[in-house]
Image 1 (cartoon, helix red, strand yellow):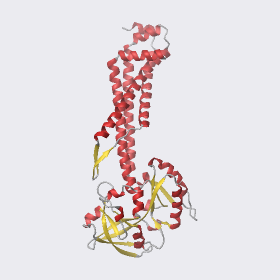
Image 2 (spheres, one colour; image 1 turned 120 degrees about the horizontal axis):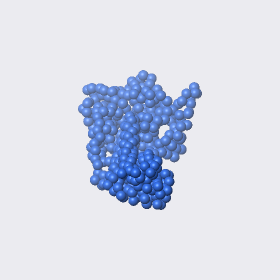
Image 3 (spheres, helix red, strand yellow; image 1 turned 180 degrees about the vertical axis):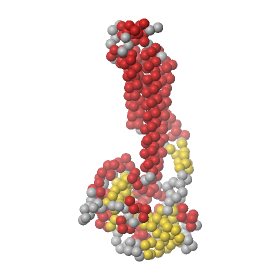
Length: 412
């Protein structure tokens, strides 16, 4: 085997120009895939963080059927005190959960005494909301979450502009509770809240105690439980530990709770899947580049070395040894391209982080990508390249092994 490696190496050096060109194509392919994966991974991580850390959390728990009718903000699908207790006990035992918060949501009429419009209200506990959603305060234009005291409201920016509402103005909220009773309360504007990205959004925030007053609730009610994990990568494990909730039945034998990860609740997950498909497509392109490059260089090598193959065959070299010789050449090209491409990728990613790549998303400017290359990603791409290099060498190697020594020696 040692002699086969030496002979393969010498053959590659002898066809230096073609070898360099082929190895360069493989190197560029590996480099392109790894750098793209690092950049797209950084973008996905940023956007997932925006979605989970400023609005949705990693996991949400609702009463069965709430999510399907969430556009109507149904008050008859709120969790009662007993159900909240069951959830709390389970979350306190879940080793993956860092924090959680309760929300009470409803639809109301918003009035500035001149005009009225509909608004989606989220009743929250500001302290727990800040712990569970660390980026929530970034949507408040410098206002601290502690500003949301009882009697205050965070108005969505879209409505504030349309209704010409400013900070410290007094507004009226009118709501109808589940029994049909109408109630109105005055609130002072604590500030404006921005949507996650781009214009749009009609979600306002008030203290959860104010929602209870507005709806005249005598008992504890919660629309949703928002959960933050210690490590987002443990999402599936945390969901498994919450599975008992989905199996909990009422007296009629029907499910009481539903548990959803942010992937089920956010449309952005479709973008994540699209980026994953693009990653796969680029890897397929890489495979094609490697396959064509190796196949071309091996086929040309066979045709150029017909007499040489005939000579070594006539000297008693077995077809299996000839096959190994060409397979080793293809394998060496793949290994060289994978190693050099990976090394250059780390350098490029380091340069990108040093220089800083900024981009805009919606109305958010100056966002910086922080790409990183994981060892697993490098190993996966490297193994793919090496395997494809080996596979691409099989056909030319078999062709060389099947050459008749007499016919090969007659070639001009």
